[in-house]
Length: 211
Image (tube, rainbow, N blue to C red; front, side, top):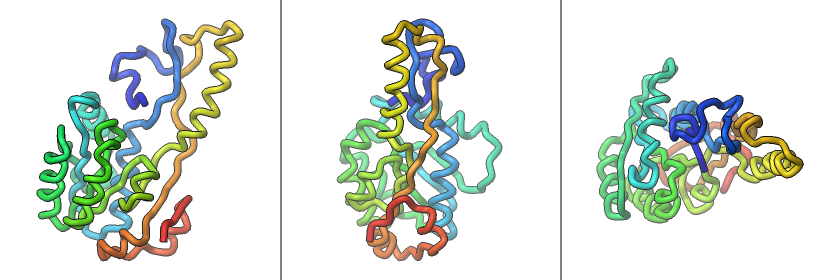
């Protein structure tokens, strides 16, 4: 579940991580731009997106967001961090976000956020805030969209590394790999409840559409 192995200090180089560690990066920070674009596609007039996470369980997310902001931006949508440490703070933050009709919410890949997803989904429905997450389970339970790596594919690919290491290859010589297969899921019931119309061409891009 490492998002930024360099920034988090696990390794010093992606191609040759060194020491006795290698692995598969979960999400590259550039995917933040994809989340913003997907929300923009289904919510006309989107002007601001909030990335919600718990700084105590995922302190590196602030660096993650700063790294994204150093990229050349193709969208005028403003992205900001929203720190939450309890379900009460989640509910309060979403209520405040809901005052802006042109806002969207990214539920980060943070263990606290995953555990608080029912509160997030309920508050987002109440305050009409569209939510995108890396995890399909959010969409199954009622959020608008998910876009994230196929975790089963990551595990399948990692088996090759396990095999090579057990045969004597040094982990530090194996490059850290990024996901190469992403999945998009959309909940049409939620879109309808939010008053959003999703184009047929957009739905054709989705790996799963919940009706």
